[in-house]
Image: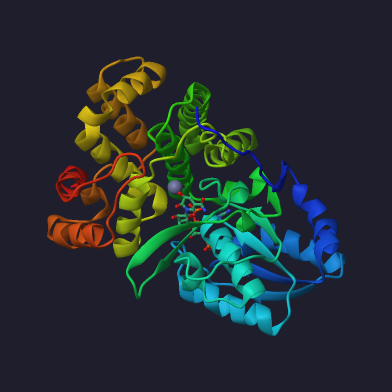
Length: 379
Ligand code: NZQ
Ligand code: ZN
């Protein structure tokens, strides 16, 4: 086992109507909130109204920035930062899914330090403080509500990249599973896929920690048992709650403590598809994971055997990869690019961008030939 420090500075409120605590929380940290959200789903599912009511009742001034897109872009971060600085906000309140909260994380650094978003993402500046961030999560998937990561893309440099900094843990996160009831079936499934992928990235990371492996199996089993049930019964509160908590724990550190790293090569591959074709994050991963496993199979035989024995009752790596594909299909996610309309004519462009961005994992590095084989397997 590797040494580690476990410290999650996020106070997470989970359950029905927890947003009722938001007003007094906001009042304890400031006077003026930059309220950030996406394209409007929060206006329809009640979360925006509930948050606004809380802020108003606590006498918090509000400046709004909306329109954050899925697969968020850095230009929105910069525009929101200018608005926040102009209005002297002293906190950021994000209401939405991973794209909104990830954007808000970088906005909170940029307002505090007067930075450009991309300078932060590329580590050209070294932020020393951030505005406190309150996250109200409306989509179970990324784990951003309790982690120090953000993923943003820049059309100018043709990159979609991750950024990690303890300063961007949300100070407070409010998770009411009721708000996820309105997430359409496809995005619900992509969220389930994302949480499974986070577990697998940890599992295939470097180092050995048996408890980490057990957390991974337990969280994936939760997704395999309750994910399909949720898709058949999308307004079931209990199922929404189980999946929401599973998604948080899949990337809040629990599966990584004691490991040297997570791999995250599959995320890197997925980000290429999301950047080029706006493929939803979870869908990019259900396409990339089986392909990546097929290509790297001989290098990770032991890990595949253990995974298979614990999840699919088989020691056979091929049967394990097939089992994973079957699960992704069962939750109606694509497992080939062709299923999302990405045809053979795109392969060169995908490969070129993967090579340009040196797509690889922390534990299993990918050569140009690996990338070529993975693209062929994703077809
Ligand atoms: O824009 P709005 O109108 O809000 O609609 C969103 C969006 O169209 C909609 N939505 C959200 N909550 C809803 C809802 N629709 C109905 N009812 C609700 N309650 O869902 C769509 C997708 O939203 P998005 O925020 O993009 O989804 P997700 O939460 O899956 O976030 C994906 C982003 O997170 C990054 C991904 O790369 C991607 O950019 N990731 C962030 C990570 C992190 N910070 O730790 C790790 C992940 O691996 C991931 O890379
Ligand atoms: Zn992910």
